[in-house]
Image (tube, rainbow, N blue to C red; front, side, top):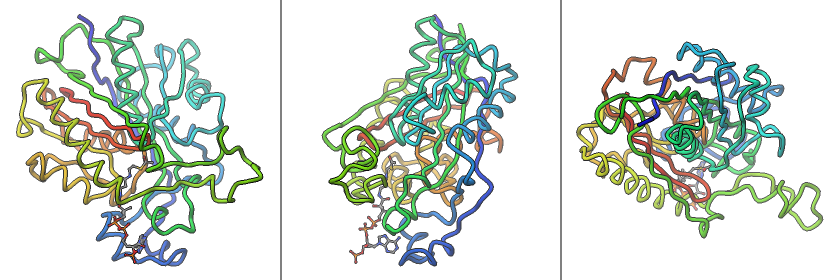
Length: 331
Ligand code: ACO
């Protein structure tokens, strides 16, 4: 039977670093509050001439190099993003053109911070069905373009960046011990759509809409409620995929959760009984990069030698929608 294996990972973050000290000069906040409540110390901000596709392109090139694959070999390019370059065409098409991957199908996927796990799930289904053998999944965001820089409750949380994986078909079955994706589990709860949203800029409240307050194009979040649901749902998704695989939290070499808040990550870690060495956390340097956060963290962990062939890795996501999910894979 055909399954999916990660052939290479890559990431890219913009050069510009925005520290908490800089934010202290912009809004009524403090480095102490941000570090204590979120764990974030700095984040990256895209240059004025960089859009989401530019970040995604750089991450994609790094992933292709790691996989030893040429762009022409790609059959599908999937970009998970909540901050596309334009409403249309898809950011995936813009990246496809820059890569020269002209034989591939390309489309975007909207699941906010869970987008990368959703992307893996879609790619895995395409590969398992036999439709494609070489797929590129990118999570890329320029959150700095939708953040309200006058709202201290949200502007301190987010950053820009991109991560990517090259996926290949394999005939060895990961569920029977080979490398590859073992189980993916994705969920949504649209009734809680307003926990995290950018209300303006779409068809409900188009740009220039007469009735709208001018901040409608910026991100809004009900942080407190989101926090509680995030912990509960990520724990549930984690337990589901590890139970399905018949393994225990102890057996996991790495857990790579969406990097939203150190307190969320620590709460999940406590609930699952993880040791510090199992948990990947880089949000102190990047903040919440939405769909990019898991593939950036995975790429950094892989390049730092934190995973070896045969290791079990759990990816965990939560975001606007609400959406959440988990992927269990063998490295
Ligand atoms: N600096 C100083 N004070 C602040 C700041 C700030 N940057 N932001 C809020 N405060 C104040 C508040 O005004 C409040 O003051 P008050 O008590 O006088 O009213 C106080 O700090 C506490 O505010 P809370 O919102 O209760 O703080 P909390 O501990 O809940 O932390 C946070 C807020 C960091 C947003 C947290 O709730 C969180 O991380 N939520 C989850 C975010 C998340 O997971 N998002 C999912 C993905 S995002 C996506 O999909 C795009």
